[in-house]
Length: 205
Length: 232
Image (cartoon, rainbow over all chains, first blue to last red; front, side):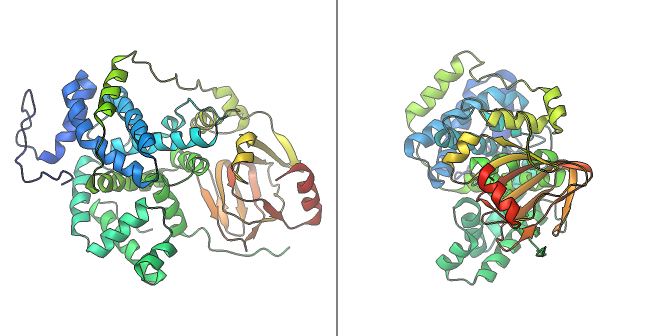
């Protein structure tokens, strides 16, 4: 479970605890739907409290300064508020949806920083979004994925994190972990294949 | 002309590119071309969605970083304001996209990304034309160049090698080179300086979006000369 407080029973939502039987895992999707449907500020604040520190941590890991990270967090959540009506819980997990918005905000921020003369105010990456229409990784898949990450052997999980988020080439990982390059590559492939298998998209590629 | 065959279309290079895109690790130039690839290619879209789901989970399972109270306060102030805080999406000119022979979605992406919209084609060689996207930026971003390239039906680009990585996304038509055949939505990744290739358009011609990260090394002395005058 993504939350560190997973020992708690599912919390009833502030107003109607319609999904009292649902796992705590789906709550963020419910909150997001509520923000979209009813512009519910309380749900929005709860989403912010959970996701904002995680989005910020992701941004800091990518080398954003403290100030820049907070600014991108703000931009991300303003967009979460504005776009929530388009969010469909059947088609994406809340974590995926928010992560993608944050990722795109970061790309746009980098673009503004590096190239002052480009069309810098336009949120270019919004033209790249497609997640609202398609359903590749539902909340259910993502919950399975999360369990899968937890069950990966620690060395595979660590490699996966390094390869995914850190600005490290496979050869840098190889140097750092003192593992042969081939081993790094094959372990990563194993980890990715395992996750893909769990998400039910285990096509041969 | 010797053309070096290569295995650079390996899935791993493609998978890694998509993973880096999903993780937000590519530079803006690379992001824009991969975003266009993802818009056009169902398989890439699926793969990126998987990586994005993974990204969301890794983001949530990592150690959170404290956010200042001011951050939430600002967000709440901003959502309080006029809902149309964001600039309107760039109006997309279907006619222009059609004239350029590129998909409307990619046109919208390019025009929102670049200060200069894609204007007229400039002739590079016989049957080969290009449009430099954001030439000003290119100067600042070392040798990175984002371009639209057009090959007339059956025409071949000058044979060239790449000192840096080259990404070529087919937008319309297709081309063939020593590495294989590519159609709409396919992306060719060349990151091996030993590879010399000469894309040849199919009978429909070919329009591509290309990103080169270092000057091209033209093989033919005449092209080297032209290159010296007209730039890559």
